[in-house]
Length: 171
Image 1: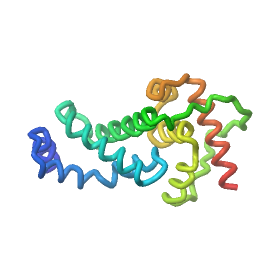
Image 2 (image 1 turned 180 degrees about the vertical axis):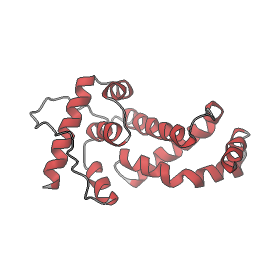
Image 3 (image 1 turned 120 degrees about the vertical axis):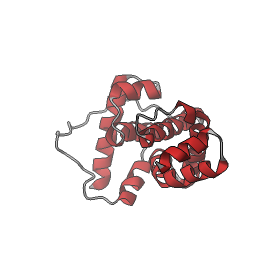
């Protein structure tokens, strides 16, 4: 009920309700931005741009769906756009030999959030984005290819390369 009122207030461009929405979703959205950005400064920039998009497009929100999922998509898209526009986004499309990852293998089980975040941030932007989109955010390789403007094969190779790199760093 309160969330509906906050969203209605944001639709009316009421600064008080915008502040409440920002305060309510700051931590959640910042955790998303941190995964896609190299440092806190970049993450804060992406977060603020993302919230500006949220406030500008809040009329488009479909109230039959979870607001948290809607805002998550905006933050992810904003982070991807940030890298593409800043020319930091490099495509890793060299094919490398990698071991097949077994279906049940999860190499990140015993890591704290901070340790996992540091590992993710040590990756190249292209590999970091593919890893985040596929492993953490649940996008398919087809969706990743469309979002990032790369081939499906490049998405798959980047994911395999990233898993191999993470495996090496963990050993």
